[in-house]
Amino acid sequence: MFRRQFLKTTAAASFAASTALPKCVFADHHKGDAPFKISLAEWSLHRTLRDKSKNVTNLDFPRITKREFGIDAVEYVNQFFKDKARDGKYLAELRQRCDDEGVKSLLIMVDGEGRLGAASDQERKKAVENHYQWVDAAKALGCHSIRVNAGSSGSYEEQQKLAADGLRSLSEYAKPHGLNVIVENHGGLSSNGEWLAGVITKVGMKNCGTLPDFGNFYIKRGKDPEVYDRYQGVDELMPFAKAVSAKTHDFDDQGNEIHTDFEKMMRIVCEKHKYHGYVGIEYEGGKIGEMEGIRKSKALLDRIAKDLTTEAG
Picture 1 (spheres, rainbow, N blue to C red):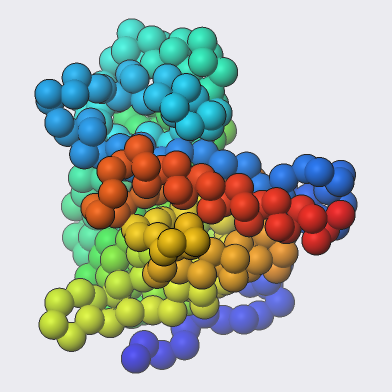
Picture 2: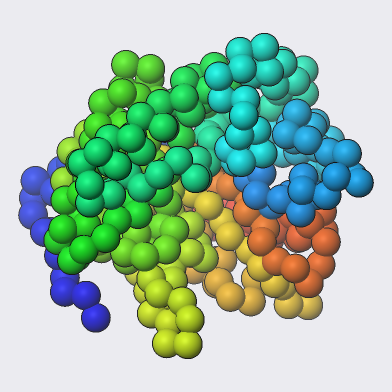
């Protein structure tokens, strides 16, 4: 097991508080207000978008989100418009489609642009620069953040240092654009909540934070997997959270997600950490269709929101 690295000092605690999004106290919500808002992550529709026979593209995402699910905020995945990051006309059309539907663009999940914690200075610098176009695209769409990965190599401490260096450089570029750089627990040491919290503390910038994902806590997969406790991990990442990803796979007959206790998780998010921003549905299951999976995910979050609101009222 990895050694405890996150220095729980007063300074670190103060920094964590300063990096978090403005959050209203749960008890201060007006009676009847939802304790959080719901958005839709584009990955929930990745099979539909990849199926050419369905003739659905990234430009259709806002319309589907609003008309099929009644959700008014979206989280893009860059691979579904990989060649459009610098296409001003395309981005303007996508933003107009959002405006037409009354949908807000929140963030772009960025993959495949290199490792921000690469050991080589040259490789790390190249990865940082590869992400610039997505900062610009996110700005054009009216997003608040780009979601990145903190892949690296070496020892626990070395990877923290390297990832923090790359993230700091990218955050410095994003800062004058008014954009955040947020890191998801997404495999390797990034799925160790304590490690990633330590990285964000090392970066030391208010526009660099986290996107806690309920399900991505596999540090190592394979025959002898290493899995981090998801509740502990989310708890450790929430002080830096600027978005939250509600990962779902499978549901029981009562509509509960069978891998994650959503009530327990949302109490950590909303009650313990006073987060009341957007929670993004990211359905990744395969036993039911994507549309049904998204609807079940939304029904589950709606039910929990109602329960929490009733208690708060």
